[in-house]
Length: 242
Ligand SMILES: C[S@@+](CC[C@H](N)C(=O)[O-])C[C@H]1O[C@@H](n2cnc3c(N)ncnc32)[C@H](O)[C@@H]1O
Image (cartoon, rainbow, N blue to C red):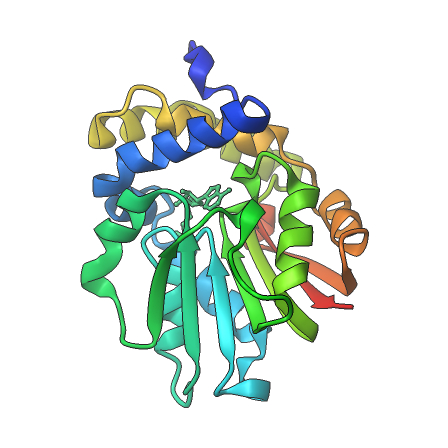
């Protein structure tokens, strides 16, 4: 299938603009497509990511959900029984934040902000999550350093992101779905000509979990651990702010 050249992730400021525009344009259909195209598997991944955040160690804490989109990960934390803290949900595509506002819980505060330039004081968060966001950053190291800056020492960062299954058979099936079915369904439902071709392209170009863990260790984090979920379709990284 021919891929629109715009679906190829670019670099630097051009990539930031491309990503912000893309998510702003698909915002009205994002939730629907998210759950349909992932066949709802993403819900289980989000629950697991929030478990790994170990928020119970500071149940009244202040947590950041960066690249929050329409708040699915923010809300997964906010709705946990016993959670008495607050969640600041940031995203640089305002239409995504606006689109999700009907779902908002009182403990979640949306702020339109770029993950590479987080407008918060040093060490002011007790933990952070990023769900399917880091793959879109124009500069991964800068993003991790920005997250490290706003986390207090000892705070946990949990990253949920698409990956590529290590098993070749599963990878083949996954690539077929990702490159041939998902872009077509995505294009029909979202009405966007290339947004859902960008998704597989960006996953293909994204560093593997080991490389990502090494980058986190170089960017202000220690004790970095990661695991694949659902055979490696996605991976969850957990890192502790040094
Ligand atoms: C695939 S969506 C994920 C949304 C949500 N976290 C979820 O789990 O469904 C990626 C989001 O990251 C946001 N994003 C990408 N790069 C960003 C950046 N540099 N700063 C802030 N938000 C960014 C996009 O606008 C988009 O809403």
